[in-house]
Amino acid sequence: MDYIQQILFLIIAGVAGYLLFGRVVQIRSNIKMGKDFEPSGDKSTRFKNMVLVAFGQQKMFKKIIPAVLHLFVYVGFLVINLEVLEFVIDGVAGTHRIFAPYLGSFYTVLMNIFEFLAVMVLISCLVFLIRRNVLKIDRFKKIEMNGWPALDANLILITEVVLMFAILKMNAADQILQSRGVAHYTDTGFLFFSAHFIPLMDNFSDGTLVFVERAAWWFHILGILAFAVYVTYSKHLHIFLAFPNTYFAKLSVKGHADNMDAVTNEVKSMLGMLPADAAPPAEISRFGAKDFNDLSWKNLMDAYTCTECGRCTQQCPANITGKKLSPRKIMMDTRDRMEEVGKNIKAGNKGLDDGKSLLGDYITKEEINACTSCNACVEACPVMINPLDIILEMRRYIAMEESGSPQSWNVMFQNVETSFSPWKFAPTDRFNWSEDLKNPKN
Ligand code: SF4
Ligand code: SF4
Image (tube, rainbow, N blue to C red):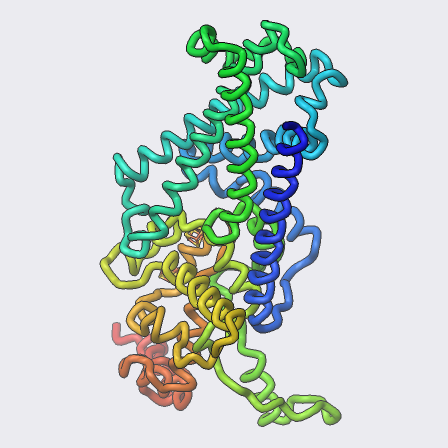
């Protein structure tokens, strides 16, 4: 029987590993369709950012209650996975609680810590479910959250509740079997939290208890394997991508918009400012971004890292004042378009040449033009995503390739070009206002 369980475990783990590997390859190749990107700043500052923001959850603490609850879920995820290591070894070797005899009373301490975290994860997820579905917190109820995004968040929270509950139930059944001296059930010592479930199962037969314990074990390990694959399709990918994403985040001051290298080189070439031996500027295929492959791979990694928390949209003045723009939707649309093209290519269909584009089919000009470039979304994001970068690239495309900016902006652009200021007066008149200062009337 044990052999059957071992073989089954290996087959299931193999299938999960295969699916997971396939998704990682797919996501990587989607991101690599973006343009090259040169990270700014020095490596030590970027590493510090990663430790503080991704590992230390620094930006989450702007909202203390969700921050503490999220911290429990995060620490629970990291620490309880140590227990999964034992699950995997037991599954492969056909053993039961392989570490218990070696670690002795330390094993009891560890298990009690795991159980404490399991209870805190369970409570935190229940509170998150209530916040989303009963209290209906505003940022979770925006239009882009309808359908799959809301279901995705609920599914993951419910799964975590059920998985944590399974751990406690498994440990309770295990403790009863240990007290009855049933073979293979190694002594774990007293486990405080799961012990509360013992009265519910104390009158079960040994056979029923073994079934409950095994069923909970299988449920937990299958849940973990399924979760590992599912995460790659969901917003929960941030638990991994938050690390590289914060490492490669822009370090320049907010409000600084990068120049377009292609334009800078073109202007320098026209003004004879390039070194004599410099190669002539390369032919520019497109100014700004129309589709996702016109963005940098960092922009694309941002999209896969987005947790859909809505903190950006909650701070966005355009969204607050009823405009169509939601920076969260910009990130979700970018990811959805990437996924669409990636799937098409994988299926042997037309990829980028499918007659669609990110701008137009997913994101409208109305959304893009509503942005005030205030950077509030960038500041608010807990994983250092930059929706403004994508918005600016699309605006550049609209302005430079389509001349499609609103008429009032086009007048302003023209004035800047001819008068070097947004207003239509000659540069020589610029200091007219100071005449009165030179000749005061009284
Ligand atoms: S930069 Fe644009 S998208 Fe971001 S918060 Fe400001 S107005 Fe909204
Ligand atoms: S961009 Fe950042 S703040 Fe906005 S929804 Fe995504 S993770 Fe949250």
